[in-house]
Length: 174
Image (cartoon, one colour):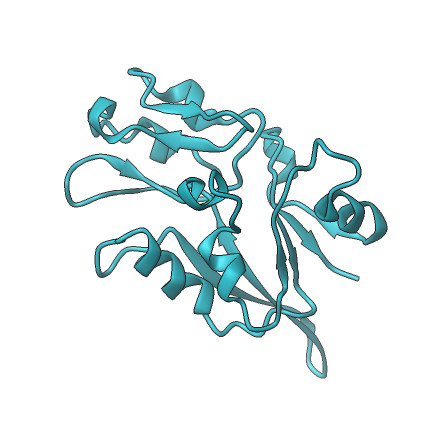
């Protein structure tokens, strides 16, 4: 996923769409909007960005899970199988993005990139509802995909690159 921080207005439509699409319990969220202010007055810069699980290539949550409930689906999406999760929270503690929470039913929960939609050829709910179209979803392994072209053509960053997780959310900055 690529998120253009120049287009995000912080409306949180992505958060609400995710909650509705995935029946996320009230008071919990699989994605959220962050506001980062940098600089000193009067030279300030603000960045708004929608954050979620980074579906890392080297996910510490998958490695930390003692039961295999946290795993990679085909295509690299990181998922949790609720029936296999024992609620130990090892995956929650290992995530450098704070992208997981304990569902009230006792299992670890997180963004799934709406895999049920993706498997039907649709975008994740957050991407589908964004009024500024700041999010792009697709296959980074396909050099001809829209997302591959966008990430190659724009300056981008990933969060917590120093963690060595290989995150797959790219924040387009310029």
